[in-house]
Length: 78
Image 1 (cartoon, rainbow, N blue to C red):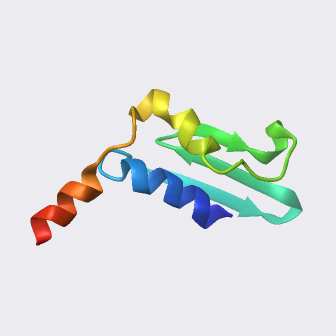
Image 2: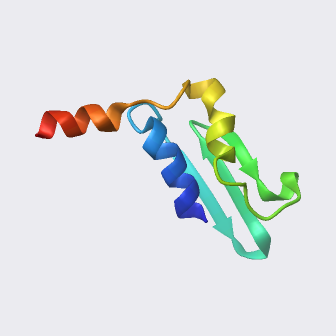
């Protein structure tokens, strides 16, 4: 689950995000922060994991729409 959430963030905003922290621990801890902003906390949400795309949706207000950086980087490499 943590890998999916990290991928959601990095595929969209890797060039602009400073840091992504995914904290998992015993007793059901699962927290996601991006650039020091708490985006998801299992304890506060009352459910196990975020839905697909949920974390990315919450971050669009901070980072803007997903970037097309990957397409640009791929075209430069060919």
